[in-house]
Image (cartoon, helix red, strand yellow):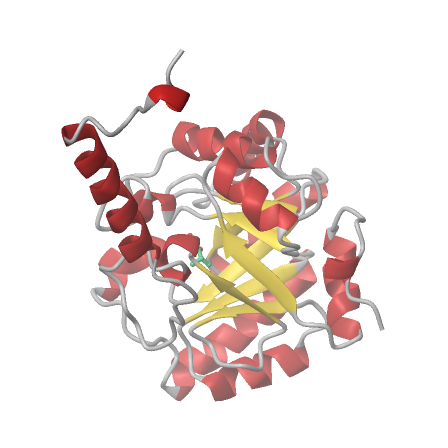
Length: 272
Ligand code: KIV
């Protein structure tokens, strides 16, 4: 059985649903710029998310709330310029999908036109269903996002695991079914108990993509700066570091400084 990663077809939202049907896990990683997106795409990633985590790892903000539509459009366009095969999804930033469906649609259309992305992601359940319906009815594919929703951090007051109690778990299942019924092609589940992920994923025909949500989601997503070990300030239990680029980059930069100081760089061959 070949996987989608092994052929060169452009990944579509339809492919993701087919991957769930045939039990092939979906790989997803964030990117925010052209060069990183090119590497990730050429490595064979199924989905690239231009997350509003750009606020944290690119801009150094504590939360994702400061991100603006214009800033997300800048990152979105930079990523699509570097991607040929992966499905590119851009996050709708805080305040742009918030209970006024016509306004939300206006923001979503701008995002699609100006980034060239394939789809949009938005946080929230029942509260944003009218907005999501409006956007999907206009022909824009939408991925939902439930569980820990970082744009609501000021409401939660903590980044702890969500939906540990029955009431919140029941609401999450209900929200997931509503998002599917509204036409979403997938849902990110962030930082919820693994058992709940298994339950939700088995009830949905559309794929779930987990982050800190255990192995039973239909796919997994991580923030690229975290999994490459560039960002050392974030070490949750769910994060696996696949490299220590902080150390690699620090050593490279220190060697450059040393060579400049010693007048060893540039040498004759590096000069005109
Ligand atoms: O903004 C982001 O990077 C995200 C992922 C963590 C799912 O929403």
